Image (cartoon, rainbow, N blue to C red; front, side, top):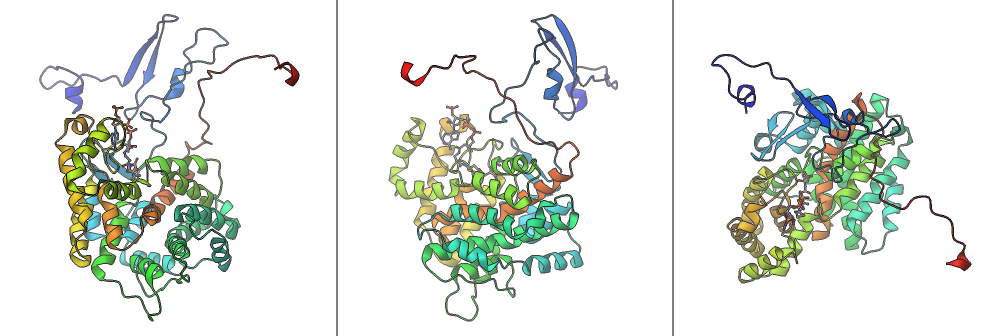
Amino acid sequence: MSTTERSGSLESGAVAERNDSLSVTDNRTGESFEIPITDGTVKAMDFRQMKVSEDDFGLMTYDPAFTNTASCRSEITYIDGEAGVLEHRGYSIEALCKHSSYLEVAYLLIHGELPTKDQHDEWVHEVTIHTYVHEGMKRFLQGFRYDAHPMGMLLAGVGALSTFYPTAKNIDDPDERHMAAVRLIAKMPTLAAFAYRHSMGLPYVYPDNDLWYPANFLSMLYKMAEAKYDADPRLTRALDVLFILHADHEQNCSTSAVRSVGSSQVDPYSAVAAGVAALYGPLHGGANEAVLRMLDRIETVENIPSFLEGVKSGDERLMGFGHRVYKNYDPRARIIKTNVDEVLEVTGMNPKLEIAVELEKRALDDEYFTSRKLYPNVDFYSGLIYEALEIPPAMFTVIFAIPRTAGWVAQWLEMVDDSDTKIARPRQIYSGERERDYVSLDER
Ligand code: SDX
């Protein structure tokens, strides 16, 4: 909407002086206030002045899931949920998936510009030579039960990394921040692959620095007695595109967790471990695993109508559908759907794809879903690619965490440098009891 339109009807050619503010009257006192509007927001603290008495704390805003609250300024990722637009530092996700690589996108997220050839090669070299983890990390991971969920192992492993790099606590040191960024991006695939090998009872495979990022990850997952693991380049490219698609997504649940925990000035490994924990949840990164289990439960196309009835009656959630921001088709889902066809050409048809495509079609023909603006999100088709790569469902969210590390790190770096950053400490509406007398045990 242009400024002219927003200011209502105008004399032709004249543009009324628009007053970017709210005029608020507190009807409890009759007092009026002018609240400035900046970047489409008002400051919650501007409402604190509205009191009914001198000792009144003042008005707060109540927004339990931050559904309408901007927690920070950021220049990293732009999303237009209505239009289904996703850009990183101004570059469309479509262009980045077509022309870039995950490590180049990671550089872009962190530095704000695409790297020159020398910068790119230096960055890739730095990440490559930091893929190993301390042997103590191996022993730590070997302490988990054979059936430990790999996300639980990754969560613990990332936290444990903070103990191997104690100087990372010096978050004001640019070199320490840079090294933590490199180490987190470099070591996440190694920890992820070690967790997988642990769950399979297989020996851990060390990083192969001759291989590029996604190929090295597949090698650490699947290499056995062969001298060198040779992944199909079409599959490594598909995995790299998936990594790009999952790299960052502005203030999602896990990134918010990283920023909130990071605001206490803890080291970045501990802050990123909080992001891993948030991503683990089935409403967030855990949805891709839940989609596969949902498709397994549906079993055949014929069962789709009864399943959708179960969703509409509230017995089920259509996992992989819906989004807090996208009220249109998630652009990442559209790209992944194309990727699925390319991967299945290599690995062979997956009957679950037919169910997923029909499920999407039926849901998008159904007013229950369209009225709630529920469209496929990034998790709806991604699991089909992971399954085609013979990755078990329990590893799907781990594979989401690998590339999201670049986003978590970039957002953490931006937060550390932001002069507005203070320790995150929300207020509350207290609705409990007050001033009760203690009753001794024998009188209760
Ligand atoms: C990710 O934030 C990000 O950017 C996340 C992410 C990223 O890259 O970081 O994009 C990754 O987490 C994608 C989302 C993956 N999660 C799922 O696929 C799980 C299924 N989807 C949801 O549970 C849900 O849609 C959320 C959690 C994604 C969004 O929830 P909201 O914004 O809080 O929406 P809501 O729960 O208030 O739902 C609004 C309405 C409700 O119906 P009514 O109460 O109005 O009757 O839509 C319904 C919900 O019941 N609804 C669904 C539904 N999602 C919402 N009904 C059935 N199936 C669903 N999936």
